[in-house]
Image (cartoon, rainbow, N blue to C red; front, side):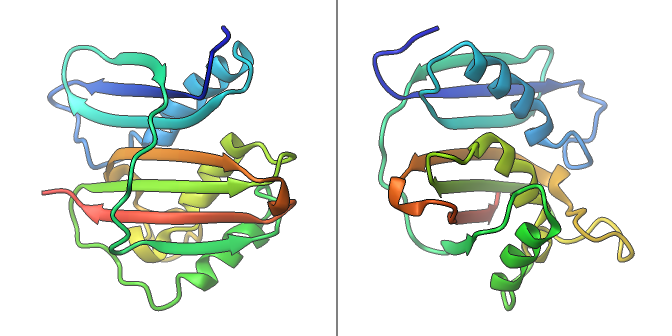
Length: 181
């Protein structure tokens, strides 16, 4: 698959009506294999990935040209890290910068993560450890389990990437999280 410009992938996960939508069924676990599959078959031009879960009989997937948009900066949290996404230090650096952030109220959550990475970083591999580091915002599944946020309650997930050669090994993440009515 080749493209004439940057692309976005969209995945809507249909869950059976009897399946609780806020418990487990983490969207990054659905989106990551889809993104990895498409990324291997493209020229690496994916800059945005969207996923949401709904009660329904089927799931839908699509690839479209990416369209830039203006994002409301209200409630935006920006964190930076230089650690490898495969280490606890990556999560710890993000968590420390979230000190003082309020945990979101119970219920469904919309989460967008916008990454600025250097050309050597694989932004797909940053999704899960970044979400795992958001316990201060999402809450923790159990008090005795670090890096296990209540991310099953994320029903809308947007992930975006900008590659900046000046970033080198630094990762900047703009976090936009909000309760969904």
